[in-house]
Length: 226
Ligand code: C5P
Image (tube, rainbow, N blue to C red):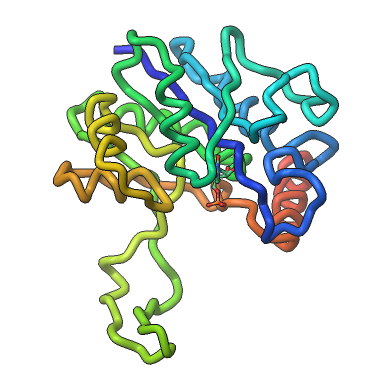
């Protein structure tokens, strides 16, 4: 069954404080999106690729796209106000032949290829959905609107999840048809009652959100090069 990859890159990145949308912020001289697509292009079996870009930035010939190498056959579509809207727009542009859909944040630009493979394998093996995750090192609290702690989930039961998140296509489409919004796709699928498994993620797949994250990503790249 063939794989479609939706790379969401339509966020503003306000927490990064840059003057361009986050996916177009440079790391080692090229946009974050370029680094993310380098890995997607190396997936075995020629995955179909849709890039979801900010409306008004969908021309791959545009100046901000300099340094981005689109995988063969990739298309670019405009995103929406919320991440969930952007994923839906990307999924709608995938050809009917894609039976497995991976959704990947452009901001997780250093996520290694091995994690993409792990996610695809888990879905091929029969899971409705599979997401990369890592054990949580901090103790995590839930709080109410006043900041009063309402609970302490047992840490060993927690995972910090990443992307690419992979699903059988009909599962993800059904989850999006619910009309709910969430910060990741697995949440929508869980709400629909489908089981999503966690596979081993990678610290390299941390999302670039703040200026500190960008510096850390640069450090990781420099270290990998020496
Ligand atoms: O905002 P956040 O860091 O959660 O965004 C995660 C990913 O989703 C980023 O790659 C961002 O570009 C994308 N996104 C999007 N459309 C939005 C919001 C976020 O494609 N409306």
